[in-house]
Image 1 (tube, rainbow, N blue to C red):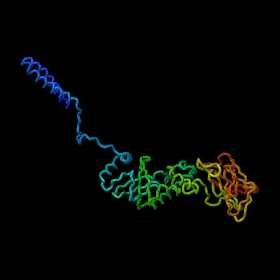
Image 2 (tube, rainbow, N blue to C red):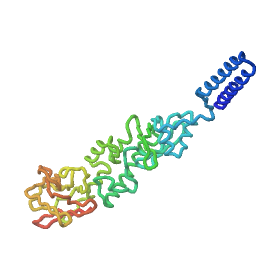
Image 3 (tube, rainbow, N blue to C red):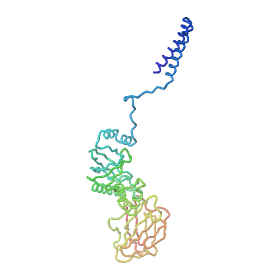
Image 4 (cartoon, rainbow, N blue to C red):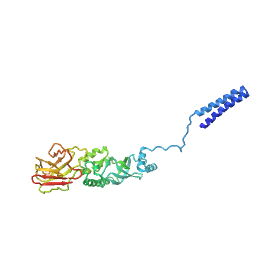
Length: 356
């Protein structure tokens, strides 16, 4: 279009010059006519050159629409195949980041991972968002703040991981759920899963089957910790039976909590052990003391423990009450991974021992 306008301009200029020459030859009468024609042609060429050019795009040159954020996330997680399948499946128009209702759980491969089938027959595997359950091998105990960091802690986590897997399979296999994909973690899509409007993610944390990695479930984790449910019982050592070096004593060390959470208060929420009187008579604790790893000592002084009663010995500082006494050690005493605790009668050398 620009080339034609330029050509018209050159023709107008040429006609102007030619018209002037002819007018000089043919007489003054024709000069005015030729000049007017040439000026009109020149004005037409300039106008055509100055006009904007609009180009109507053809269907072949139209750029493809940019993918939505949801489609981009799915393509990143599945190598691009998911978007193609979704565009071709007319019966399932929802994207994975939208709630998928009437999905059926067809497999549970881990305490926090499942596979579901949509109404169109497509299968998807997702992790449960906002939670972290121990693996069947126990995983790393240090990721569960407050759990024993030794092999004993790992074995305890593995045991609860297996129980959580069985419970999740029992609860969800062949059940209809609503799934909402919320992102990816370690290359796997993670989602919230609901049954009858209740989130499975939160239920895992409430039962102590998993720790919370999302602050929305922090309250559920605090409740499970306080009750020592599930994995949080792995921070408390309980002997299988009363372990005593002398059968004449009815005292036993009933529980040990050596590795409190980092945010626990030094007194009530910190390290502690529990002494229990399993006999039918009260025991005078005046001569008894606690020895931890042969280096730390605590003396009960004037205390009596009634039949069937328990006394919690807190390593931190606090005010003694009927069922609680405070060591006020000033620093941690119980090793996070392993140790030996003895409850010793200084008068007769009777002793109760617990190793963990």
